[in-house]
Image (cartoon, rainbow, N blue to C red; front, side):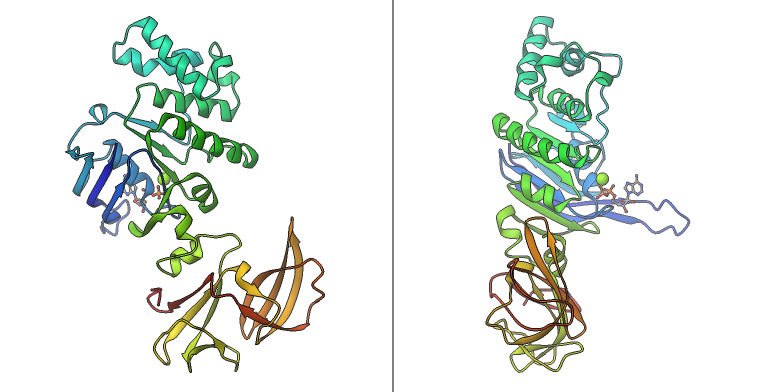
Length: 355
Ligand SMILES: Nc1ncnc2c1ncn2[C@@H]1O[C@H](COP(=O)(O)OP(=O)(O)O)[C@@H](O)[C@H]1O
Ligand SMILES: [Mg+2]
């Protein structure tokens, strides 16, 4: 099922004495293709849960429209929307077995007993929990509990699956394992899925599309493989990628950037207006330690697991780049660096807009 959002807005009355309303989601429009996994990404408080809750119908919209395929569901109650929901805290029924938990939504819908058991077992197999059907939730690990929660959301065969930070309670290793599992389950079930996370690496590894938000406003909505290489603005460039993108603040002069605290000009093929305050942003893997013309001073060279990174300064700016393990520099070494065109972006310092 395709989901279309048109100028969706949610305002809350303030929780404090200021009396100002909070615009949690601000005139957001997007279209989620059928059968895809969309990551709703952004820092805490940017409006992700609010968006998800409007899609599920739990939260009424302030203005705007939501369409499931061509049907306007903006005013439709949650139980009529055919959505499956999974939250961070698994919210399983503690006194029910795994099987009873998964069956429960079908029981509510008055599906016959044999049929609901057959369906629950089928879904339990899909999420690899079939060996634990007789256990209680407390007898399961966090990852297993989350599998049960996903099974319970899928058993009604929802047209839309909504997951709100489903992996946040799991430890790092399990989180990576479970995100691959969610990817597999989503592919197998083919259900259009919206996955909320504040973790850019999680979003990137799991999704077909990323919708990145800041303070209720959509910053970019594009295919996951494009967002890293084609950020719409400085916020996006900074939010996506680990280690984070290098940012050189300076002035655009003579077809290049004069970084703050340096007299050199870094040549740049991207055009801005003379004397604009700009930010040249460069991915760490786009820093070249051979054949460059800009002078840098090394602070440190260190390993981050399989890779080696050099931490160095150009003028006042501290930067990081990948190097070979045998690159022979130490603190204080003066080096010449350059930047690859790919992975290099120019932004207006004031607006964050990309040139
Ligand atoms: N029920 C509410 N009443 C008032 N403000 C709220 C309410 N729910 C959320 N907000 C505010 O709306 C903004 C977005 O919240 P939320 O959607 O929960 O963000 P996220 O899920 O991205 O962390 C925040 O500023 C939050 O404080
Ligand atoms: Mg949230």
